Image 1 (cartoon, rainbow, N blue to C red):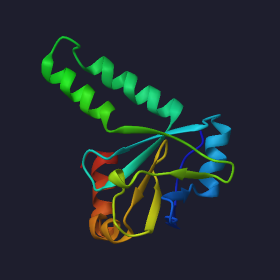
Image 2 (cartoon, rainbow, N blue to C red):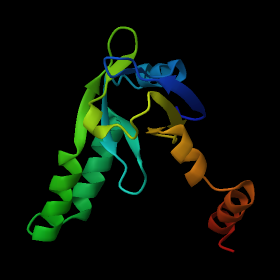
Image 3 (cartoon, helix red, strand yellow):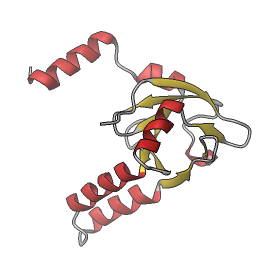
Image 4 (cartoon, rainbow, N blue to C red):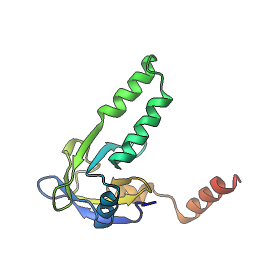
Length: 147
């Protein structure tokens, strides 16, 4: 399985384009994913980038979990889909991000791998939000052992 991991500092150019890190582009190529879907994270001040096959699987799972005849479920699906954008990489591995979805006014950004997808953060916000090593170890232990 190809996984997005690690983190990479990047800069937004004057036109609003950003280079997808080379190691992420390699995985996207292996997945034969020319398009990336991006949306604001539902819980954090960051953007989540999904390779198109991953996005399609996530959306299918969401659709299956919702009742199409329930108005609340319809609104959840509509809002989730309305906040997504399709991006295409240019020949140099850049994507154009609209200013309305950027997680910061700054041009300095941070890509963070998330196994089957990756996130784009304001580096300062990521540092403030992430767990300490002790908290991380404790949370991993709880989830892996049930204690």
